[in-house]
Image (cartoon, rainbow, N blue to C red; front, side):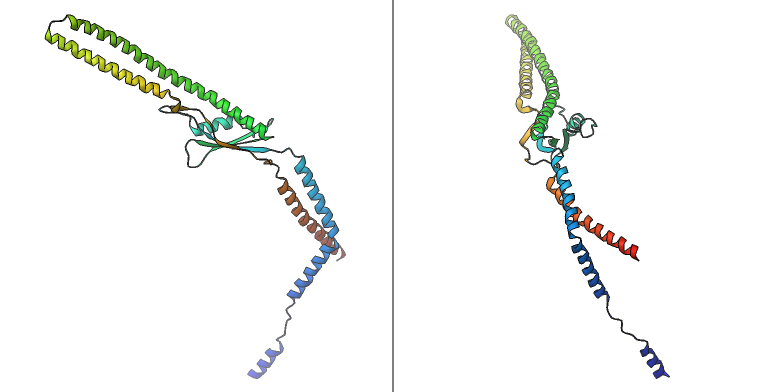
Length: 275
């Protein structure tokens, strides 16, 4: 009984040839044949797409970009302009990217990483000269705002100096009066009191003079600086936009793949119609 079952089982075993590889090889050959058959269409279509992209790239108005670093101005021992505030001021007043009537020049600014007072500013315009002129314009406006702040600061310092000088003059007059009393007094106790007051006034004059010296030092150019560029302003010979090489390359590759897709789609449509 077991032998019969085994013989029957053997009869149903069939050899199935491994044909997928042959079918894949045939399909690949057909694909290559189709491509070679329509090679002139592929070449022509690709050249047209590439040519159109090249015309677009060369006719489009070039946009240039300059790159510069700014060191934010400061006044020591005073509320200087914060870099974030300056960035908001620059973008709010000089960036035209969101202006429907005037798209350029465009300005982008940001704080340089790991710094507190350095700003990187990029300006895009129709030429490097225009971008450089726009950078000068931005700095000019910033300097005007800083001049107001510096002027207020200096006037405040000068008023303090003038007040101290007036106090010195008044104290000197009081010292003169005390010295005259010292010359005429014969009371030893009163003499000591007048002499003590005279020394106190002299110390007060010295303290005021030291304060005046410190205030004058606060007016030193070393303690007051304006925002300015540091290093060299980077300009580029080639425009930032359009990237002609990239546009033409992408168009060329796109033309090849699109033309191949079209010929396969046409063949598929024909075969489907015939079936």
